[in-house]
Image (cartoon, rainbow, N blue to C red):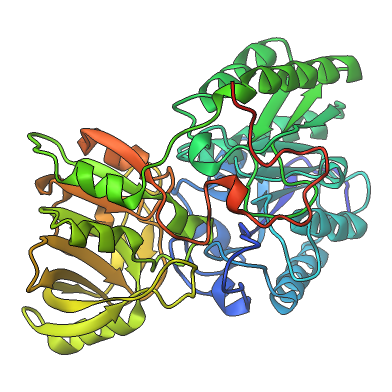
Amino acid sequence: MTGLQAQPRIAIAGFQHETNCFGTTKAGLAEFEMADSWPAMLQGAEVVSETRGMNLPVAGFAAAAERAGMELIPILWCSAEPSAHVTDAAFEAICGRLLDGLRDAGPLDGLFLDLHGAMVTETYADGEGEILRRVRALVGADLPIVVSLDLHANISAASVGLASYIAIFRTYPHLDMAETGARCVPALQQLLAGEVLHKAFRQMGYLIPLHAQYTGATPGKQLYASLPPLERGGVLADIALGFTAADFPDTRPSCVAYGPTPAAAGQAADRIAVLFAELETQSEHPMLTPQQAATIANQPRMGKPVVLADVQDNPGAGGTSDTTGLLAALAEAGAQGVLMGLFHDPQTAAAAHEAGQGGIFRAALGGRSGTPGDKPYEAAFQVVALGDGMCRYTGEMYGGGVATLGPAAALRLHGVEADITLVVTSIRNQCLDLAHFTHIGLQPEGFRTICVKSTAHFRADFEPVASAVYPVAAPGVFPCDLGSFPYKNLHPNVKAAPAKA
């Protein structure tokens, strides 16, 4: 499919899913076609026009490629909110559309794929490896394929072998998604010029809990600081910290390196692996119990609010976003001035719209997922505000994009000592942007305590308005205590938790 043109013809496509093998609902085709925290499925020219200016790898690649004089052939782009496995029907349908688009694209000089790196389907444990296998079988062995992956990718040797070059996010929160896509362009230019990027790949021997992967602290801060010196030595290297809720032998951190010689690439990958080993004992981060979090919420406070992160019910990691453990603890403790979100509960949102602004109604909020240790929270609620759920992000991570929350409501507990306001939505979204509250008329800075269902992405927008941040281990289907995962398919040489010093 090659034949280098004066203006290189580069196909671009994206197919993203982060799979929680312990989740409760699967991702079917409808979940990839709908809009949620990211756009609905895009096809053809929409891939570029509907993502332009957004912090997405496909947008960053497209902008940089256009500046480099490349002709873009957009195929499709889609994502689904993290959940349990991608259904075979969805996987086959989307792969079919991707391959059909490549067949119809005409002569190509290269291909960019915006993938995640932690997709598990009903049939394929290594979703991205299977995508790349099918694509490579179609386009041939020689076409340069450059790929962007998420920082939480679980990378297989198969994917590294099939891709010509892989770039990986370097920040968590993921502030550099567009930048990562753009980093694929100079590597593609090298490949188009006939240069060889020799590969090296290393996988690590222990898992890092997701809340400990925050790149503003150990070990992420040190690991990613090691990359620029390697680049100054002529090696392109990247690190993936892994997604711990996927359960297959490649679930683990890893690194890739590309150099002018096999030795240069291998030496760089070895240096990263040694650093991982040195940092193993420094990668634990504590979590509060819901009761400890309630005690902190009740402490006298002046100035900025405290942020409590309900890290194990993060929909961005496949959580249901409807567990009530932290809410129940705060209510029992009579906590005052608390703002919470986002609760995914279409029934309660609908009841709020039926009650109307200022209305009072009883509901059993959340707790419908069957999460062990969790149950619905039954109470009376007063409707503070109603919204259509169209939320334009204002923070750095997703700024410029629009979240689709479905009919939404701000509710306040009624008839109890506690003063708790919460936001309920009809579509799952990770609470990572202040706009999730401000779009419905709430001002987070005015509360004593803010509770978010997120693991680390919230930090970019919420840390500047917070006096302190505490992860909380309430019930959820994304355990950050890795000993709680019933792993069955980890590689025997991988430890589920890092060693303690």
